Length: 155
Image 1 (cartoon, rainbow, N blue to C red):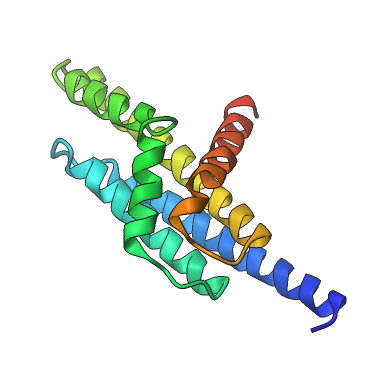
Image 2 (cartoon, rainbow, N blue to C red):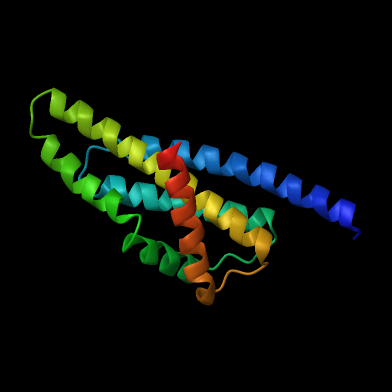
C-alpha cells in the first residue's frame, strides 16, 4: 500500500470511528437517564465497551474484552472517577423534589457524553499510532483520554 492510499485509509477509518464515537456517546447520555441507581452506570459502561468494539472493527484490531475492561477500570481511578461521583450525587439529588431530579439527569447525561467522547477519541488516536490492543498500552490510552478530556473541558 503506498503512502497516499494508506493516508486515505487512515482518514476513512478516522471518519467512520468518529461516527461511532458520536453515536455511542449519545447512547451513553440517554442510558444515563435510567432511573435505577447504578444501572445507569452499567448502561454507560456497556455503551463504552461496545463503542470500543466498533472502533476495533474499523481498524481491524482484535477486540479483547478483558483488556478493554482493564483499561476502563484504570481510567476509573482517574478521569472516570467523576462519573461515579456524579452517579452518587445524582442519586442524592433525586431526593430533592422536582428540581433535584432534573439537575441529576442533566448532569449525569453530560458526564456520560463527555467521558464517552474522550474515551473514543483516545482509542482512535491509539489505534492510529499502533495496531494493537494490549494491556501494556493502558498508560498510553489513559494519557490520550486525559488529553481529550482536558480539551473538552477547556473548549
